[in-house]
Image (cartoon, rainbow, N blue to C red):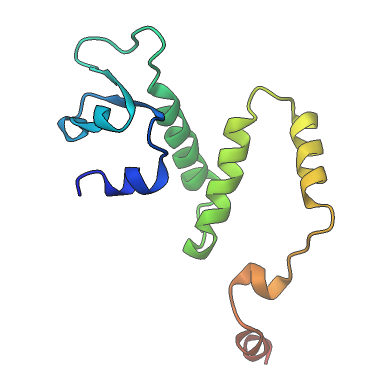
Length: 127
């Protein structure tokens, strides 16, 4: 199936804004598919596609700049952090901080879970 990943993760009938890559032809069958052809224009009415490009640039700058020696095991955490910051970019630092504090009340993260090793591996590393 040509669009299997999209079908698995995006509800049918959803708005789908893409560039003019030919692989997307036929997506309008299951989705409200709008296309921007960058060879002609970068915006057309209410069909934005640059948001995703902005997010990837933001993420790449972070991985290459902040998480230079990041571990692949933590990639989902890096993605979650950057998705939160990107989605809350209109808020202030104080507002984002308070959202984080409210979301962690009653939760914990043990060191062995953080480093991605079992207790035996951790004990051996200390020896």
